[in-house]
Amino acid sequence: MADCIFCSIVSGDIPATRVYEDERTLAFADTNPQAPTHLLVVPKEHFTDIADVSRDPEVSAAYLAGIRAVAEQERLHDFRVVFNTGADVGQTVFHLHAHLLAGRPMGWPPG
Ligand code: 5GP
Ligand code: ZN
Image 1: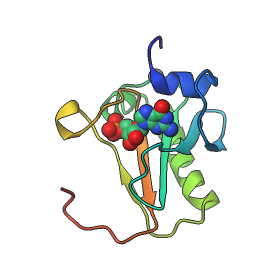
Image 2 (image 1 turned 30 degrees about the vertical axis):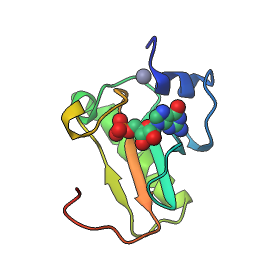
Image 3 (image 1 turned 90 degrees about the horizontal axis):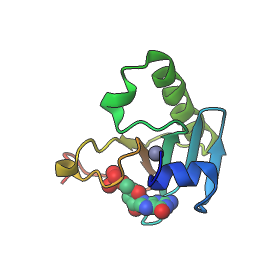
């Protein structure tokens, strides 16, 4: 999709620290990390958010498997996955991404 920063990272037009890639999924380091491990896991295909991708069960399943594969590759045991969905809860990039956070204690509920 034109003017989408994460589509540009998927295509390689914008550089990122890529840590995992398969046919449908890419994971890269967040440029403003909120934990010792803070990765963004995106479907290579453009979806706006988790509600959008859930309309496609096949892509959804592949995406979840991709998130699990990233966590396994990085040997994460305790981790948090966050899908900000909508500007009011902090979504700033409207290409679906999972924040994969680990490496420090985390409170609940989130602020
Ligand atoms: P959101 O607020 O939409 O849930 O999360 C967007 C995330 O993308 C933020 O954590 C922000 O730091 C990250 N981000 C924004 N622009 C870039 C970029 O160009 N490269 C990378 N690697 N991360 C980005
Ligand atoms: Zn996109």
